[in-house]
Image (cartoon, rainbow, N blue to C red):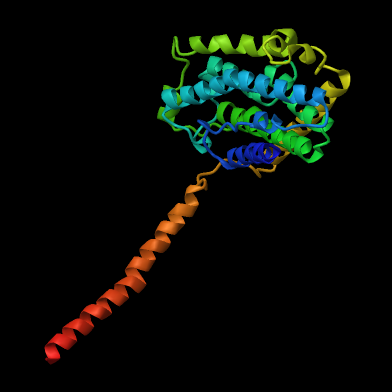
Length: 292
């Protein structure tokens, strides 16, 4: 079962690294798959209960904030017809409600205090520390930092704020369409409620009695999380000031690179060596026939 720890950490980091290199706003939110990392047999029963509770809590919270983020990205695509951050910017003036709701989803997935992601992710990471899987706990912390960088900073800044790089027609089309935000209004109160009133979330978990003993809002944990998030924000805005992370047009490499390159190699093999052998064989056959 410990293999799942490795797979969960790899998936968390892969999503963050890939999202950090993306230049699109729709569908670029990384899924911090730390819930998958919580299924192992730790050294103590309390850590096991905390791990399973964290996995279930994170899966539940994930449905709420990830759906909110996808609807936010869909709103941008639907109203502007554009997803490239290099062709967006300044949309908070045109789509203020869509910005607000997407920001709530970004803060929750970033494990910001007072949101549901803060509770569920901290349970999983704490279970890692209690199980002495320090490498997994620290790497999942790193994945959370990357998630905040992408969803709490990069996308909101370059899509909603920053320099307006929209085409005139694109900016003119952008607006909060009446009725399109209404389904999303159910998620933000739920994210805040589950993040503030933890018993409502704990009562849904498999080991709810053990969950009641976990208190994520200790002064140490809150101050630690805020320091990490604020330092990440500081680094981000310094890089923005230095123009080191300006969105630009370019390819986004994914695993399709392997079969695309494999297809090119196969095409070269068919056009060059195989074709040369076929041509040589045909000429030899023709020459042999003519010499008779």
